[in-house]
Length: 275
Image (cartoon, rainbow, N blue to C red; front, side, top):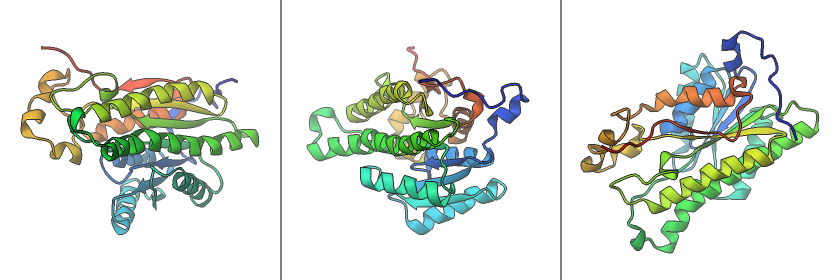
């Protein structure tokens, strides 16, 4: 098994970042990090499918139109998808491949996720399983469904230049404080190592990489107690929260041929320090 080569490594460097003619899926693409990732992929030239579960369907369609309008009319479509269901994920990925990609898929961003701050000793079984079902199992079902398409394309004579990108978290490699979030941390640690494992298994037909954001100024942060949000910036090198739009370049890089020789990588956007 050999990693696919760059189509034209001697071409001008900015052309390496182009996603023109590519089809991408971003789960959880209606808000937060997923929204900005979808925006970046569309701006780079890709046709983008965003998936949603809790968002109202008409609102999801409006988000897709908003992304399209701000990305020079790029094709952006919203699809409902329950990432906890393997059957649902598989059906939606196949539908997107057929309807949006005309039978082809190039990029999959497994981004959908949830967070909760519950003391570990108080977790009940349903709460614990919900966290793992969305953040870990859902990420795997998404990647697996895309990988089956990518493998099929490779076996049919494709170039094998597909890309899977997981959204993990720095919480998967360290324990953030002072919030109690053992289930979230464990789910993201699992995602990070899953990405590395799949990069080895699937090297012949796709690259697999992982982005681990630090504290990002999304709606999720807005619901956090002030005593936590005031403490966090003091513990990170950047000394501020990240605007989610600051992440889109990293995802475009990993989705494009600019990172043609990168697979199994874990990209952190910030790191904790002690003071």
